[in-house]
Length: 303
Image 1 (cartoon, rainbow, N blue to C red):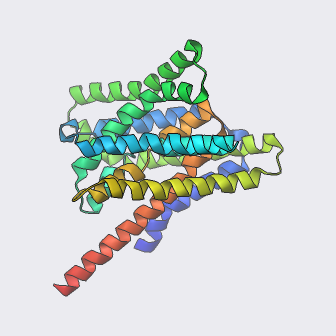
Image 2 (image 1 turned 135 degrees about the horizontal axis):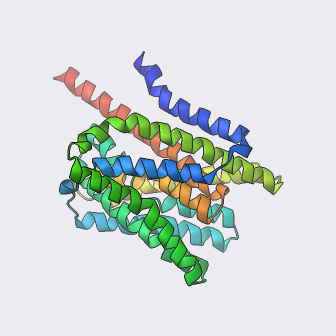
């Protein structure tokens, strides 16, 4: 298969899944999304080498920005009474670092251990802080809401993590085996996108709102702006020698996690924010990889 065609397979599959889901709103099912996400997290935890984690001061700056990119847009948009847009912005900006971010950094010839450490830090602290953060942003505290939210997130992340740790203790070579499951992870992600689109389509149709298309486009635009700011701010705070790494750590997001949580704690429109982000950050990754390959080719030709 030609490389150009092969490069289009994944984005094509994502678009087809979303289009099919949008056309079949009655297929909406949040439970399927939950189980797909837990399976993806299990595969991810199975292949992480925690010995490579080395936290630095730069990781704390990235963590602070990660929180800010969720909270600040939310406050600004709620201030002008754009509540659905504010929720979409929050769930887009608050997403922790993506599983694939260290892999992409490896392709770019950067410091993989820095991005891996950022991934572990943000994926450990941000999800666990969300129940308290949601209470703070809503302005209403209730143990009856806080504790179930916390327990739900602990189950969502803790069960795959514990299972992965047990398997790694019993079968250490499972780390190498997990790396061969990238195809399965992507298949699960495509299934998730189908049900996410179906959920969003069902929600939009149930609103009977002529402004739904405008809301859809506004969420796409806000998601794009947040994506651009994430990569730029990450680059700015990276300091000498770690600009690309910081940019990738802040910019490439674990959207599958926040898409599911947005469906549970907000609504399908809010989940569209991180869904659009998938396309924005992957478009930037594709451009980075193209520019990096072209630079290497030019260097080889010159040599």
